[in-house]
Length: 186
Image 1 (cartoon, helix red, strand yellow):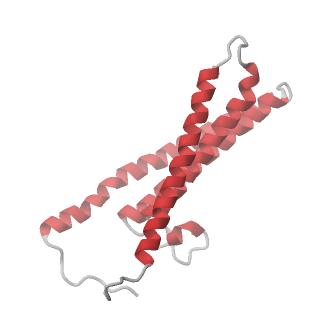
Image 2 (cartoon, helix red, strand yellow; image 1 turned 90 degrees about the vertical axis):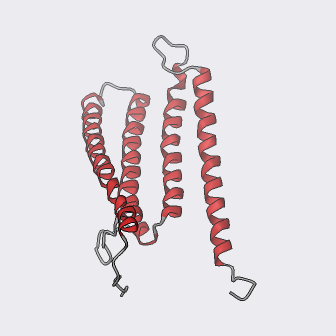
Image 3 (cartoon, one colour; image 1 turned 120 degrees about the vertical axis):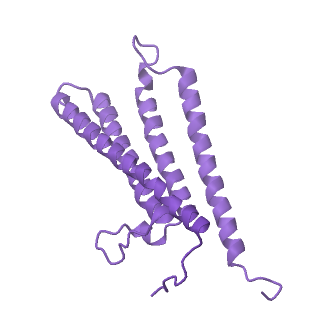
């Protein structure tokens, strides 16, 4: 059991500490955005089901990748909402709850950064895969992809990967440095 604080905070530290609650409307807004993604998913799924017999395999694959993209963005929203609230605002007190996400038991700002970077790479991967599948239509009337656009999308994806590696490496170095015993006997 953790001890509860016996002495009240001075007014300025209390105000500063309480300011974390200003993030609550932001998380509530992200919950509303999650609802928008649910509506989008249902709309796209309905569209797929209504046209599945008349579409080519490539069109169906692109639509399914779009659905996966919506799910991955929704997963990212859940990580930010739950992990961010737990890390920066207040404890959710989910210990022992059967539906507690496994990752939430060891979430902190560092873990959240790496998980978010990996989710962004996943989302970028889906977008890039959709582009590569649709790339056969380059030069066709109404094509939405250009060679330069595909090149920049690939470069940006690689930058996301390098950034995630950099974040993970930095966090690992910091974790190893803080785990080492102090040499001066402290």
